[in-house]
Image 1 (cartoon, rainbow, N blue to C red):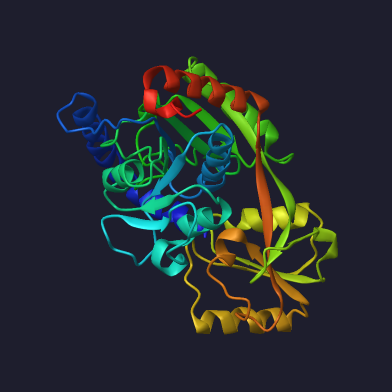
Image 2 (cartoon, rainbow, N blue to C red):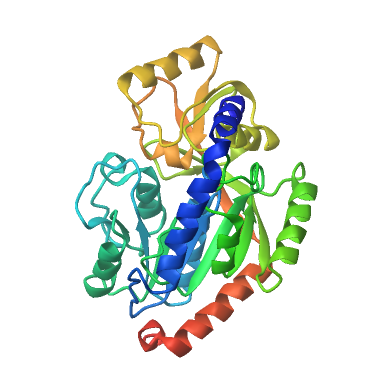
Length: 360
């Protein structure tokens, strides 16, 4: 898969300067006020990336939402809802109390967030300003989180966080279609801080060097590191959390995320014995044919059960497979300084937005 992308990037390299110029021109139009930017009456936090593919935005968004909720704020998460069939201008996945849309309608990530975060509304819509306004006006939210919002310049934000995957970092550092970057590196001047996600013993040295590079290039912007730590596993159709040591073995793994090999590595690093593994495309839809294929492969490998990601499990039923199916539950653990940073930013929000702290 990586070789295929390398070949495509090589073929697309001559077009990178053109795409880069288009993205730079677009940025200039917004920042100079030649294209309208909406200012909302509540603070906006954007979590996004410069690179294509997964950087762990969804777990970080969930972490931030929980942190803000504990501080007495009323956050809402705004997502595009990639892969979801719901086509309304505003799709309320959850109002914080009731989940209205399943993964097929909302998309896997919004549905996962809605299930994981009781008390936090989750909304989707291609034109993000519309679900933003709905969350404020109809649901009483006083702070918004834009999931994958770095390139969505039409909504002004108070805090822009850019994430890099510890496994991928900046890829080949070339702009699409010649590389992994959505915009030129100069776009990072817009953000307020960075987070490198998925730090492991294997990539720590490389990530430390990349952190130093970011600090040299953008000395006024903090760079945080974060790890993923397993807390157990959930079985399809149940909210009970199982200890990893209690799971039946061997397990057959499968995953439809941006970097499925990272999930496989996480399983093996946490002592989970795998009889086989199937890597699927990001946001994979689970047809009956695919379910049968996974089940057959697991049986051939002599597996006692299946294991996948939480994002995949949200699209499955308790009876999707003949074997029990579990999802590895991972929590984000950022640098302690990240919490201090967010607390400081919230204090700044409260000095600018009365609505943000009027009930706190």
